[in-house]
Length: 307
Ligand code: TXA
Ligand code: MG
Image (cartoon, rainbow, N blue to C red; front, side, top):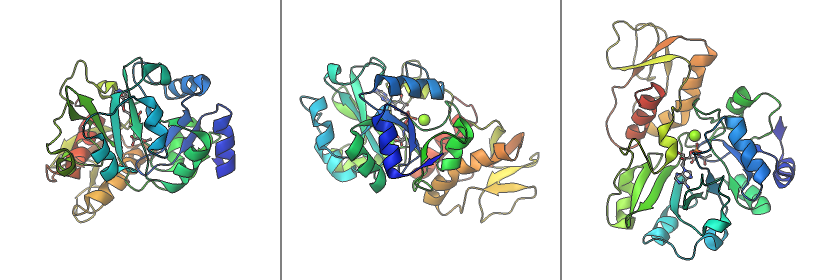
């Protein structure tokens, strides 16, 4: 069910869960202050209670009450990247963020999405928790119909068309006196150097107890079995690039010179494999190991079940 602005505000203010657009992916939103909505989000997604939720705000003012002070570099990051696809995790006054939303951790995640109509929505509702609006494990949603595919045609969706960036926000977490990469995303680690004075190190490698618990779970995966390759002798179906030709049926992420467009199409392409009922697909991974491609490669490796 597609909602207009007033209907979306109304449902959210009445403790309901609504899918909302952001510049990265659609979020499954509920009011932070609504225990009912927070519980419903975990239930709908079939999400582990150990996997906390990002709090979405529409101004810097909105996060001020949550902490007595902010980590070094916070202001520079906010000035440079908010609103935008950057999530910041830092210690908060615990009594102000419901335990369920932060999975009992002593810190919370905040994001100020760069999406005008969603900002206007949050102005009306107050802070919203919102994980990606997909069933846990499936490819993230970048179009309203992806949300409807996972949660049914009647599920309330505030339609904002296709998400511009197409991959999730980059997560920085403040640990041991430094900002570290908790999840790769649309902002690449190098972009933070001028603002922090250092390259944030990755904490993705702490496999058994990652600081962002979501890294533990299977992610982004279609039902199709994926083989990440750059040779296709045995391939029966290929997902590759529009500027390359393949000898069997194929789908394209976009042009191999245009990683931004590939990112935007990424999840829709993975979902199309399932829509077409394709059992096995060979993914062309002959692309650079830098910039946004690094995030795209990481998403593919997770989707293929490497880790
Ligand atoms: O682009 C995005 O970030 C999208 C849109 C909707 O904003 N949201 C999103 O949420 O990707 P989700 O729930 O799919 O992923 C959030 C990640 C998870 O890995 C979770 O464990 C981590 O953020 N996270 C959230 N709150 C945290 C906290 N307090 N401490 C550590 N990790 C946290
Ligand atoms: Mg997600």
